[in-house]
Length: 370
Image (cartoon, rainbow, N blue to C red; front, side):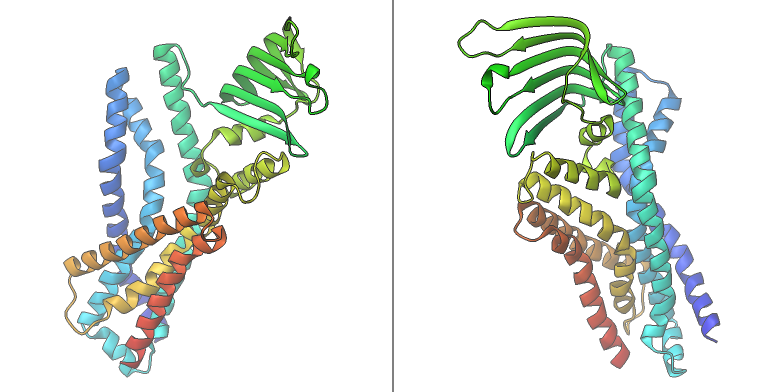
């Protein structure tokens, strides 16, 4: 009998879930992605094929983010229908508790959490990077320049600033528009400044091309040296580290973001209490908590849907929007509090899910004993 109950619930959930994902996805894509893609295509007079390619790369992020809202709306509508048709009452009369009714919903929530985690870690970063590369190629082809992805990286040794790298763009194992400062903490007469048209990673170090080196000696006339290509001993930051630094946290997966934080702490550029580290750590922990929102949305949606009055799709949609608004406000507040250090980043990332679970658990217990 329980297998039949599970199948009944899953059949009821399937339609509203896909409807919810489609509705929220199309809403965000139509209001954000379509406008930006159309504006970009019109500006550079691009063919229709490029427009659809832009949509293809930009849409996965919004589809993945629509999964929690889809499962929320699907649970509200399906459970509301079962309740309105007295099927929930019949199940409980047969001795099936509300917690057992929750089981198939929770199983779907776990499955969708896995799908969302995979999409957030693999699909979305890949598509975002492809989208940026496509836009850069278009801009470079029409305006003769690549879109700037400026990188600045101070490198410290024992708390003292040793290197300061500035590059206009990071392109794989190549740096464009390079400026490099060296500061000797023991002898300021060894300080120097380098400019180069570009630098290429070769072997285990960088080779600077069209290089101009200026020795910064206080009180003396600066000494200038030029070279077609040369290496700078001691400067060996890997292209992988620089490439990840050029991206935003949203374009990085968990492993890459963890690497960026470790590099910042290892080089002494940032301390654990600095704002940038706190912001990165908050976003890192949210990368773990956000994929689990489908499961926690189910905890609050199921008891909200089971009420004595007859359910409707309009009421279900309204409740879904209210829950999403509550979560978004709480998410925004916690993200800012975590980045500011008011709340520990780990706690800030899990407070929204914990709040959904706590409210859902209380409501579910009340429905069980009502």
